[in-house]
Structure formats: C-alpha cells, structure tokens
Image 1 (cartoon, rainbow, N blue to C red):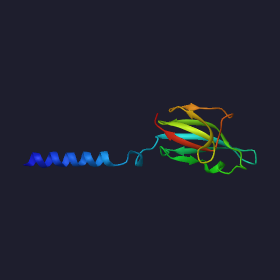
Image 2: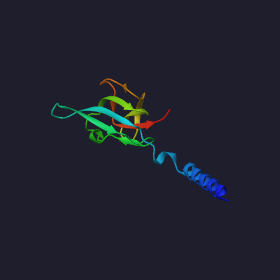
Image 3: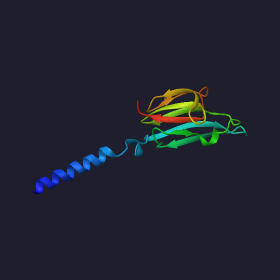
Length: 117
C-alpha cells in the first residue's frame, strides 16, 4: 500500500512538472552588454543580466528613433541572441553566439531576443 502511494505521488509530481510552461522559468544565464553614445559625446555601457529567453527586449536607452542606436554588442550569456535594428524586434537582424559572441561598432541595435538554437 505504501509503495502504491509513493508511486502515485511521484507520477503526480512528474505530471505537474511536465504540465508547467517551460518558458515561464527560462532565462539566459550571464550578461549581455552594448555601448550607447550619449549626446555629450560620452560612451555608456548598457547591461542585461540574466535576461529572459523568448521575450523581445527593447533597449531602454535607444528605444526612440531620434536617439542613435546602440552598438558593439557582446553576448556573455548561455543563449543565442538575435539583435534587431528597430525597437520591438523589428528591422534587420543578426544573431550572436553564446559565451562571447560579439560584434564591432558597425552593428547597430535597438532590441534583442534571447533564444536556444
């Protein structure tokens, strides 16, 4: 009788785990950095730490079209990241590999999407 209850509890826990949406708890581990040129000529570094996967993120510093886009992205997360020239993951895109994928200041971006391959 005891074994039957243990097996039922284990199967119930397994069913609950499988039923939960996988994306609810998924996040890239690590950081994603980019550079932003300020109007006074200074260059600031922006960072996304442990960003969520599967969610489009518009970079707050460069969300408006009248502000110059960010550049020089570096992906030190464990997910791939696709960077977009427009806000809301719109426009041209380029994908950076995990664990050190980077680009020069020629790659402009306003939004990003982290994802597994």
